[in-house]
Length: 162
Image (cartoon, rainbow, N blue to C red):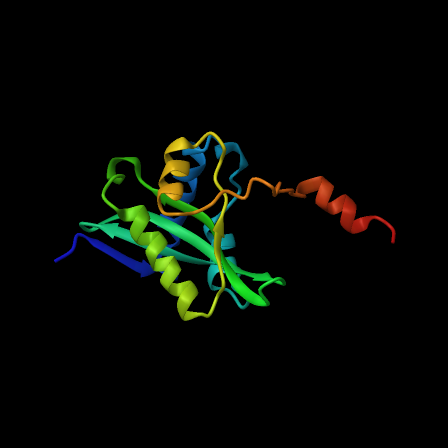
């Protein structure tokens, strides 16, 4: 029997999901930005209008990592896509194929749903992740630069006059 099991997250998994989010943020040196709570996760994963989904990877009975994803849309393809927001495997369980298994599972979900692409971002300093993704045949989108509005800048734009 395989030591690896990947399952969709359920409401009872919220404490584990929050722990994994915090561990990922620590790894990415971004823990100071985490404001997620179990209640906000409950609403955004399992509320009336879910914004995202999560998969949990269990290795030999231990929750080893997760993937958080949501649907996007490509006007050029006229097709939805799948965006991988977070992929995280606990450091002591890396190198066992867990991250690859999560990506394969996401690729199957994208195919089953008729999605045209699977996309994600990676921090430019995270060389192990970059090498892992490129080994799979993923291509960096160097010609695209991501932008983000958040906090006061987002509120300011929303409240600005037409």
